[in-house]
Image 1 (cartoon, helix red, strand yellow):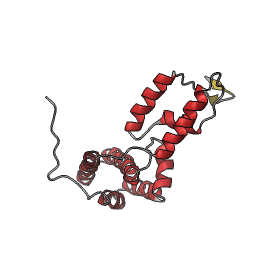
Image 2 (tube, one colour):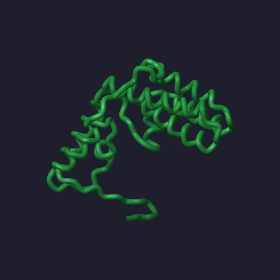
Image 3 (cartoon, one colour):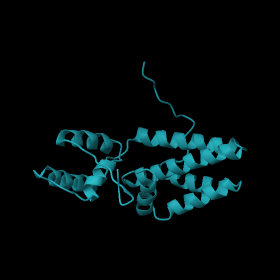
Length: 180
């Protein structure tokens, strides 16, 4: 729906469904619903549940996301290492574009995880990154522009800086067991 050229969305929940969504999203350290309720405008609340959930959302948001496990960090390191290897081995501009944009996204997400910050996508990744690691978003942006101009080294240097904070690139020795 639109109102005066602004998109209008309704998110309709019971208290139980709200908790289910927020709990699932918080485990991922990224909860759009939590932030909508923490920072958004409550339009109506006939029984006080909305105000209660908004207060709970503000409390959860302020507490921060759960810590990432060592395994999750290693998974990020491995994925970024693999992308760096792909970027170094690619000469096709179309491949480099997609590899580099994925590197920028994953590096930003890792930086937020390292800092104990909430994650986000799109504009929220950039906004949260600017708060958690001032200047990193700009450096990633400039590195991506360099890739588009045929130079991968500036982006690689920024990515390596972030990955170094958690032990550096991870390739040799990385393994995960599968489930039968």
